[in-house]
Length: 138
Image 1 (cartoon, helix red, strand yellow):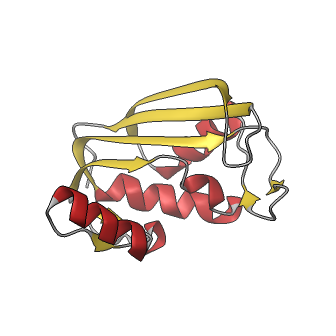
Image 2 (spheres, rainbow, N blue to C red):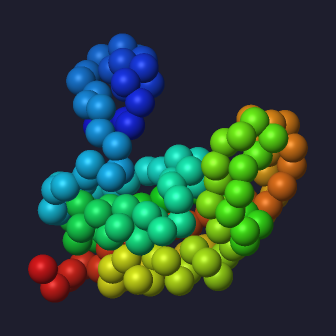
């Protein structure tokens, strides 16, 4: 189990009673090492040019049949919120295109909906649930 933020990893380790390593997505360099990669409201901060590499790293890190779930603030145009935080604000079409380039997923389900965030504002969200093909050609 990993998290990209040391403080959150420490809290998780205490709560779970097991070691939680600190590892950012751009440091993920393992093949077929994970059954699932959960990225709930975290990849939405990756600049768009870097997202294909991160998603390929996730695809490569999954075992055949492994699952990946991610959620992104939607909108279709990258930018910053009122707190100055960067968001890639993917549309469903953007998400589909970048995931299809990342690897040969066995399934790819993308859904749009409304949700809130730290800023307390309701807005569009994009949820991606995908599964690596059972045979990935590696």
